[in-house]
Length: 347
Image 1 (cartoon, one colour):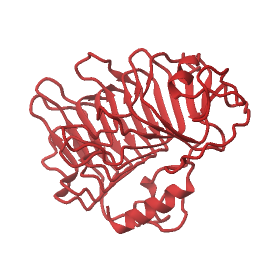
Image 2 (cartoon, one colour; image 1 turned 120 degrees about the horizontal axis):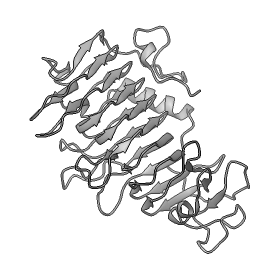
Image 3 (tube, rainbow, N blue to C red; image 1 turned 90 degrees about the vertical axis):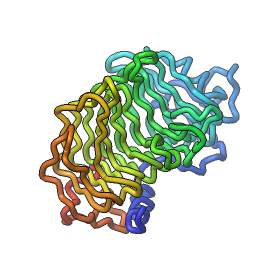
Image 4 (cartoon, rainbow, N blue to C red; image 1 turned 120 degrees about the vertical axis):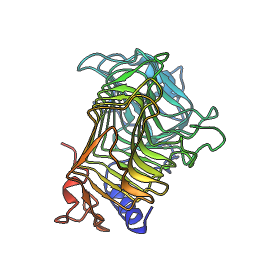
């Protein structure tokens, strides 16, 4: 990552509402109308799950939640794998978050399993380092939402292909479940995996109608966003995708082709290994993929891989963005040519 981007990332993220990576000291919980039940690193899984008597584990907390309820985590680190196997309903998701005013870290593999539809994760740090070197968070359900989360695995892996992936959306074989209507917004996804061509910040594997908007996606070993092999109807807009091995790839395998995906109004810069935008089609070629109105610059091998096979690229700016070192919410200097493509504030 360039020095300018590193400064912008450090300053801008410090001004936004993200949990602290270093939050390890438990704090006293105070009852809040936002929260239905609570967990704390100093709690007890035999407790009632109130602010005064919190549970101890994230797994026990999510197991107790019902549609429309919110589980809140006290400040500190919860070192445990978590699998969510039941969700909410339309308009009544189950929600997991840090307690208001606190910063919680969940370290381990985080999995929203098939059938656990309508799950929301917000205001939380997910540190995906886990003993099995599995992607985290993994989503195999419908209508999962991640907002105001910080996701990393601190460059985990390096021994096997794909053992450093962060977000993994869906399963192209159908065995574990297609992910439909996943939304990732107002978050940062960073430092995922080493560079072995298989470690990505967001891997849209077997998914339909994914939305990836208003995020910072940076310093990941390989692709910032990989659309492979069966990513359909993805919307990617208003993200800063910076300093990854490669930026975004449209791709497929011998039987699948990612199609009808839109990459627009993003800032995609400084890919360290190959191109900022690229494709790979060993079998069928994707259709309906669009790359438009992005600010793209500084890929090691190039900016947009030609001859635009499987996507059309129009009206993109090939210009270096002017990152700001002030506390501007967007991280790009107002009034400059790329400012219109910066992440937007919430609301």
